[in-house]
Length: 290
Length: 290
View 1 (cartoon, one colour):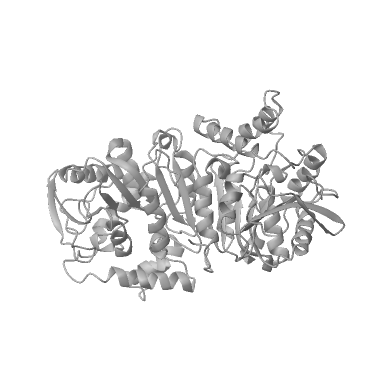
View 2 (cartoon, rainbow over the protein chains, first blue to last red):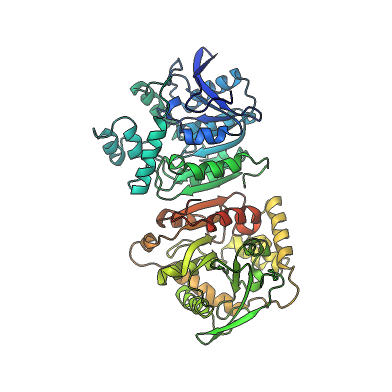
């Protein structure tokens, strides 16, 4: 399937656990694939081709809609653990014994749940703009600073992303424009945007993920997978303090933060992100340090 | 002077402000030099050849003893601002209009003071294991956890560094062994170790640096120099929270933190540090992102 790119890879379907999963798969087969775990309300068509095509140059990339999202059937679970069971069934159905993962926002939480449920599923993890269980101020879109931008009638469709994934600086907004153009490149075989049902269930999952029992963050210390943590220092959707707690408590994690960047730091600096994440993912060391 | 390396460069002297400064200079002349600012009690012979020789491959590297340290005359000032005036006079005497700086620990504070006093002196800054003015828990060597290791009679000379710059993990201690071996490579023309007079004045400077007037960290927002901040997540001498505050308040700073690392993260992972800092320093972009 090396002839396909992000914009041309056909949407395929796989059935597992009573769900029909929509996915796309492209890039150079060989070593274990790189799987992207998607953000709040994100579908197959909210992944950034500047990232997936860069990684697809030397390995297979897999994008998928989890249960109840995009063209995947079933209901969106109201817990991260529920979403993790679906994602695991999907990877099993594809015969994926081990993969690397880029988990962004909600997708990072999914990766953190899955690595506990089945450590062998991941070789290396990249966690971007995400939070550990028990993290703080996770995706409270009702906060006045965010609600104002989300509800502004001038912000429709992808324009909302430009306002909430990027800072107000001219450079960040210009990067936001470029990101939106990239998301609009693919013309056919697209997912419909997610609706309020997806939003509601995923928000319930965020609220549950904020709770914790016992010693806060203690479960992270048992995870020794090489991990690269990335976040923008001015992320208003999931504060950067969550990445600090991840890097302090995971045994084997490098943290990289970006200036003048919000929740969409990886989309703001795609060349830097793919260079660093690419170097990290191409290492075979037991250490996260690259 | 390209024939010289860290271990063979002769110690030279330059006079300015009534001080005779000891320094060494080696590497490939051409672009602006890279100046290292040294840590608490550190002399010319506490710089890591694995770092300076790596950077000297494509530019000149300058190491120096600030006033009252090593073979430099004068007294150690009891404020960072006082040390900054001496360092500026030294760079002026060498005709250095603009340079890059790697400021480590105390040396990072010096760099932060100098970039405010004369912004044109630095093109790009690398700040490792350091803290902004008003930072927290800066070099309190009297803390029981540190005092125990520093006063242990089993830890003499460089062995103390292995205990306080590295974590207790076998991997970190092995890296500490290698670091000490590198520090011992140079056999002649060495500085004597610093004594209690240096320690006392530099400790006074740390205490003054912890104080602040007005809004905490506000002065950092006026600094727009591309900056790379590096720290070990388990630094007990200057907690990593200080690097978080730096990266959040400096306008243009990338933060990189290392796992299983204490105050000496740059000496623990010299290959990774020189790769990242080298890529950062070779950029001509206005942005710190590399």
